[in-house]
Length: 304
Ligand code: PMP
Image (tube, protein in one colour):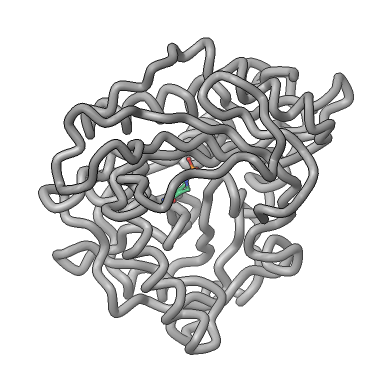
């Protein structure tokens, strides 16, 4: 990805893509203490718009606060940076990656006194779990790796190092022939995917794990809001893996994954083994929302 044309916003200025580099002694590269966001912009008939820009930027600042990383810019500057990157790269629809990291002044566990840096990059990125996955659903395996414990990792933060756990789970699932992993929490309850929140539907009601061990996903929040607005009951609660086996429908949500149906977990077919009707309804509404075709959710879009 390093070798391509385009511009990246780095520490306050737009620079050439190929020049957006860091030193090998960058603190975050060694210890993983950095925070980031994943954001998407979509083509609408009024032009390209970023989905829930403010919420993503707020989560970035919350993540930084949790780790006492003082971002040397304000929210407005970083929101403008994201808009600028989409504009300057002339992207119609894309994925954006704001990243906050600790500089290379000194190594050692303590990063006290080191500089804090920010970059924002954007590039085209299609369906994360495949177009087929969006339409037909994916096959998922419960991971042998456990999700974060609240006092090991502070899961309100979206932090670089946490993704070691995600990569382990995803690697295992892919090696075993599945499309994605489902991670359980330290007590054995369903937590989330390697980069997605999870939902199940049973008897017309939508269930999703509470936020104890999973990321407070912005797509999760959008789905909860849309479901309530559609009059579908939503319940946040502990969920067991066998509840997922026996549910009518299940799906993952995430900025990258959007709304991806799950058709199988641990070789048990879920529902009819394809995208279910409520999932389809929510997915259709979601794609209308991000494309600016749902006026009631216009406030979630910021035109670039
Ligand atoms: N959980 C994890 C671990 C993630 O990485 C993501 C992607 N950011 C999500 C859930 C979904 O969050 P969002 O909808 O805000 O992208």
